[in-house]
Image 1 (cartoon, rainbow, N blue to C red):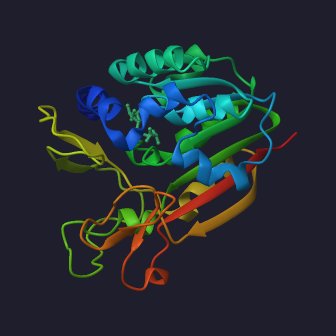
Image 2: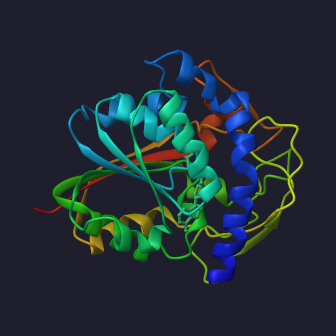
Length: 274
Ligand SMILES: C[S@@+](CC[C@H](N)C(=O)[O-])C[C@H]1O[C@@H](n2cnc3c(N)ncnc32)[C@H](O)[C@@H]1O
């Protein structure tokens, strides 16, 4: 397993600077406008509720744009990621954007070695996060252990049905990959990324895993979490099926043809039993 994590970390390290330089992550806007929030967090606000004063942890925070947005909404945020290059970008942005956030380098599965157990009111994650984790049950155990009793989890994530589609097919929706979690990873060798950039990458092998919606819900229930909301959306924040999707004014992507055929993403909220 460590080789999967090593491959993935190298791929994220290779992409971090290009992501921070891409207009799609809008890093400059965070620096010039102290009220600016990422499109992802702007979408979340109606379901996120008031997070002022909460102690929050953002798992798999990447270059910190969503973490900084949550801090701007009033939470005291810690971002966790295993990519040191991503965290270097995140720390620089936090400083330049005058929005303090603590960033901690760790594999999600080792988060309890570096963060205090039952300390957090809010765990936030998603948008291309869970697919890098081989074992959703083990992940749910980490989430539950980080939360204080009564604390809550907020995920918005790509829908597992979307992850199961073959993105190379531009003419139809074709189920090409597993919906359910499999022991073996999906191996990808992709020189590109999901934002606009001219940078050529060298670390292109990655390993990923899908997790069915029921598997994620069950993993949380088994770890003492109560599901308080599960909403499926007809849009997702990245161009997940190139050639078949259109972008709206909020930066969300959906199928150009009958988007109601597919759940594109979901929001799941859960509370740890007191
Ligand atoms: C697509 S980003 C998701 C973050 C956020 N939604 C964004 O777009 O900025 C995926 C992040 O997960 C991190 N990651 C992948 N596997 C991880 C693991 N096992 N432990 C910690 N971080 C991990 C990567 O380093 C990367 O920064």
